[in-house]
Structures are given as structure tokens and as C-alpha cells.
Length: 251
Image (cartoon, rainbow, N blue to C red; front, side, top):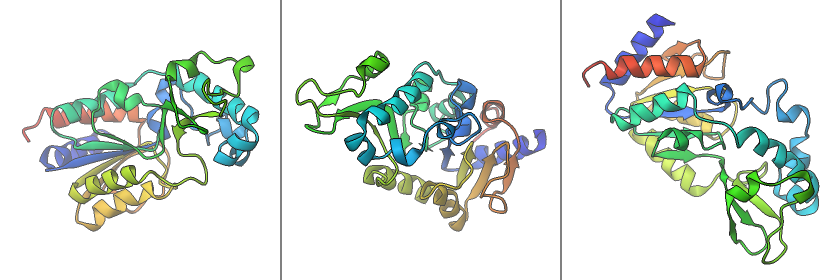
């Protein structure tokens, strides 16, 4: 791992414009298990039955039972070393931005400013009926007796501003992530298997333009053969070490 981090730090120190792509593995150390992993929420719920707009409209109680479970995990979570390292790199001018597939808001909580939430975030809620925004603190206070959460104005079902199955990635997220990939000569891929499109295309776009791909993953991913450097370590260990080395070198 040490040699790989040294090489990655050299690439990052020499980079003119670096970006990061993160997935569920970045937040595991914050107490948020990958929904797809053993013990994750998809072991207890059928995502197509609870995580679609149609489910919220026709089975709001069941959909909100799942959301309440998700909130109980995401709500108390705090940034770990991986989130803090990326924020440090951005603050030092070594990272242009982070594209994340996570909905937990931990990059922003760590201090990252330019964060593109590919799948939205659990920190924003709105009514499916009238569109009124609702205070996210209200979601944290919900109990099983309060669901489904309904709008006090029109009685419509309140939902988080996340991308459910079958919904399109927000155009703003597509545009901003595409602009980052267009400018980047280095992408750090951390904690994502590379199986979910279209986010998984970003490293390929950077590579196709002559950029480098640094991957941080504990398990083999879809980026096998694409990455220039692979660091087989937890993100919360590798990213702080990478940041420390890169920031100690002249740009």
C-alpha cells in the first residue's frame, strides 16, 4: 500500500486539475453500511417495492418504513478520515471537486464545497403534492407513529430529494460532473465498485482524454484494468495518507 500511495501522491502533486468520485465504501467507517452489502438495507427490503416514486405514491407507509430505517443510520453519522482528507485537498487547491453517489451529506459536513450529489441527498425534503420544502430536522424527529410523513399544507406525501430507482439523474448533476471530468487530468475513485451507471463512466472519460485513474478499493471492481494505480485499503486509511503525502510536496 505504501508504494502505491507514494506513486498516487506524486500524480496528485503534479496534477493541474484533480477530481474525486466516491461511493458507499467511503462512508462505511462513519457507520453507514453499503445498502447492497451483507446486513445492508437491501437484505431487508425489496428496493423496487420501497425505493421508487410509485411506491411512495401507492404504498407510502411501506416506503417510509424503509426511509425511517435509512434515516436512523444516516442521521447520526459523522464524517470520517476519508471525507476530511478530500476536504483538505480541496481547501489546499489540489482537488477541484467531488462527485459522490452517496446521499448522506458527509462530504459537505467535512467541509468540501464543490460536491456533486449524483443521487441527491437526505438533507432535503419536499412534498410530492404541492412541492413545499420541509425542514430536514423534521425527518430526524419522526417515529414509526408519524409515517408516512405528510405535508401540513396539502396532506401530500413528503419525500427526500434523492434519486429513487427509475428516476433520472438530475441534469445539473450530470452537467457539473461532466464539466469536472472534462477538465480533470486525474480522478481519485474511492469506495465504489464501478457498477452503477452513469457515474461509472466518469473515470473512463478522464482516462480517454489522457488522464490518470487512482483507485482506492478493498475489493476488485469494474475498474480493474483501467486504473493506473490501485490502493487496496480502506478509504478512511488511504485518503488521509494520500493527502498528507501530496500536500507535503510542491505543486
